[in-house]
Length: 258
Image (tube, rainbow, N blue to C red; front, side, top):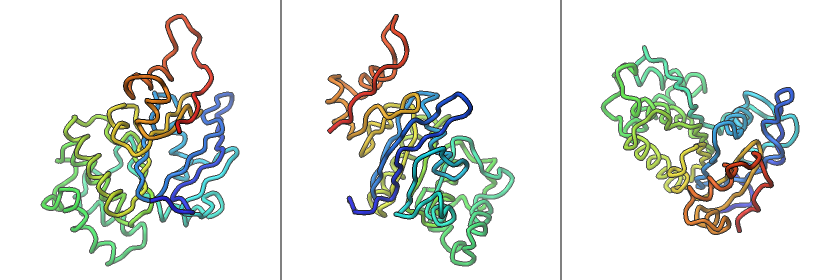
């Protein structure tokens, strides 16, 4: 799975908003086919990192490379290799499922080739018979599946999932994660899955814990638990991010898991 050129490499990314230090020297590396969970409480900096990775903002310092290309110098190349499912729904609810995907294909200049991908993609995400349905009539879980199909339409190398299961029932969350993990396994897709739900991080290849704009630890779920001296990932996460009663918030970051 590992290669000399990672799908995503972030080096010492810094981002501040006035006096607020949203990211403080964040670095990470994701290989092709790897599913990494970005685990952090609200306010950890997850959304800020995703804004940098999707080109909505630029870092104050640091570097970002997608498939070896400098994203800050060549954003168009990077965006062509990137698919995103944002936390907030972004479908046009008055268009059909197919209409939303056709619009996305046109934005990427895919033409007939892109339109030909729509039906197989919908079948892949379990919506093979839903192409003509108006998105407003779909359940929340199925709308997310449409957004996933749309994010994959231009065949990205890297998929960003920004708290994409918020508001979904447990079965829909499980189904969506299984779909994405299957793409990692079968197509070599690299995924960064932001979440504050520990049970989602437990299913990842690697876990990256972010808190107050800093990396606290990184490793497989088993490594993170072992390094913390705790009995579970949830216990380890709470130990790292929730100060003991009476203690001041913050503290020195944990060492990276082996």
